[in-house]
Length: 118
Image (cartoon, rainbow, N blue to C red; front, side, top):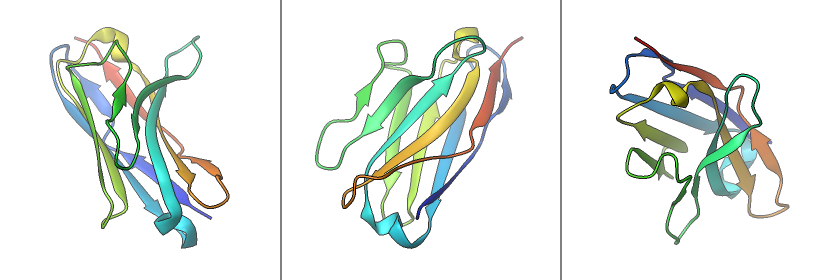
C-alpha cells in the first residue's frame, strides 16, 4: 500500500507562484516507479500536468511548459510541483499519482486546491 498526501495549494494572484508537495508513505513507497501530477478544473476532465519517469525526461502538458517544474526526492519519498507565472486557467484541484514498479498498482492522493485569482 502507498498513501499520497498533497500539500501547498491555496489562493494566489495571477503571475504568482506556488509549490505543491506530495509525500508518499506506506510499505510500497520504495516500489514507486512513475509519479505524476494531474489536475481537474470545475466541469472538466482530469488532465495530466507532468509525469516523472525514472531515468527519463519529465513530460509536461503543453499548457504548463516553461512555467511548471516537476521533481522528485526519492530519499524523502516526496514529489514536488513548482508552479510559476500562474494563470487563472490553472485553477483546479491538483492530484498526485504514483504507480509501483512491481505489480503496477496505481495510487492517488486526495488532491489540493489551487485558485488563481485577483
